[in-house]
Image (cartoon, rainbow, N blue to C red; front, side, top):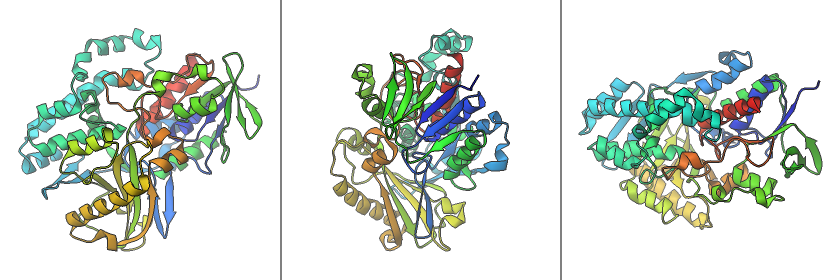
Length: 492
């Protein structure tokens, strides 16, 4: 008998991972991608001798990438290498103080005690709480589907349910962080983790305080060939086990036969399959690919608040700054005002928190000699019709003024080249509705349960992976969505 065939729509990181997992299980897998390249948000830009990782710049939970090589019978170190960071990030506060987030917990706790009014014991207590939340939620909320009865019949699920009060879902992240720390700088430090999935710490549940554990306990890493090598290495792995990629092939429609997904339509050509997996944002999956079947649309999910987006400037800087590291954060003076601007006014405040990533710190050939490649990002609202040209111009001035003041140098005079990514271009390049980076927001106690399932409840043989579905956005969770889909396909 011929092998069953799987078609994956979209070559984002979740789509690639799903392709690998299904190929290992014996499927013939074909991936159809609208762009001329794989990776979705995890792509790269070349300009004037500079190379920039265009999207995600922080690599955590590296074991999920290694696992894909192991499944395929390969050794990851032969194709994909990375190093663990001793310094996760450097923080710069408006009052002129700085804080270095060391990977070693003891060293970081000492840093906090020596530079703030909080103690090392408080830091250790916080991470212990973060670890406890992870222990309760990991196997239930992250590694399995919340939409299968079998998940709730397992003993470890029952144990987690009995400990649910400990995940702190009834308080906001900000309230919880206030209860741990006295120093406003430390509260702001840990509130920032809400942005890891595009949420608001003044609204999102304190359950998201699990995120620091993922970074501190499991570590932060840097791929030796840059973040985009995650994409290229996994594509090479997928192709080595028979996966076929079709670039410049946007899918026009998912074809159904009696509530069963049977094929996709691409440029007027029908491609049949036994199962179909969409790595496209669920909003566009339903509104575009399943537009002929409006009755299938999960209206409540599609109407939910979207996560925040990003405005990114890619600057070639003709100087090197010794005080900066791979990851750098320049905090705003009024964090609540910044989030109110994003979530209530749907605009950008005059003093946004600025993230600067410089991969040339660890990969020197990403910039010409004596120069640095700056990935400069601020959190912004999803696109709902704002005047982005005006907002971008204002943000550029404010960001340059902020960085110039902090670094004691006129940054505007050092920029040799510039590229820009904003919510409009994020949507057009990655099919992320409104340019939101993580699908729906997590600004609610039940947000984890309200994300779209990894399998359609109405259409047989139709599955979903990627940041807009369970368990959420970001590289680790996108890779876990591939695992969930693969396991579900096997059971079906």
